[in-house]
Amino acid sequence: MYEGRVVLCVSNAYEKKYYLNEDFEALPKAIQDELKIMCVLYTEDVGGVLSLVFEEDGTLVFDVNSDEGDLLFDEIGSVLLIKKLQEEKKELLESLELYFKVFFLGEDAGKLLVPGY
Image (cartoon, rainbow, N blue to C red; front, side, top):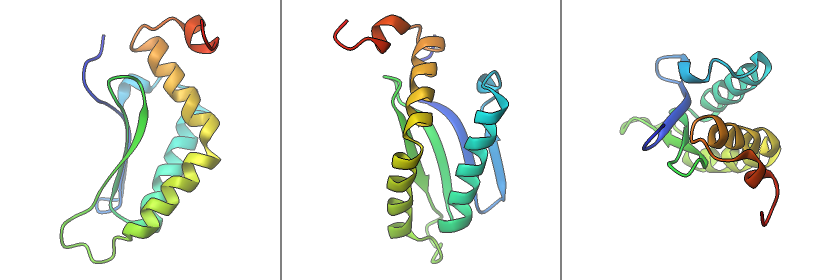
């Protein structure tokens, strides 16, 4: 299946672009739209480049980068906004992790949904 990290989506404040990995085009349109809105608003607010990336174990992480000389990038705001998004979008992010683990890593959904199974 997949090895290494897999990019779900990227929003780039410098190029004013958003990218959704074509492997995830099967996600419902509403989820695709929610991801786009969340990521673009993040980069509009704090700047830089935000990538949502699945780690090898299926954990979804926020990966943030900024140009070295970017004096407008708000590092503190970035950390605070990510924490806020992780709380407000917890259900969405957990659902995406489950989707990735089942459909991309081939894990058993029953074992993932039933604790202690």
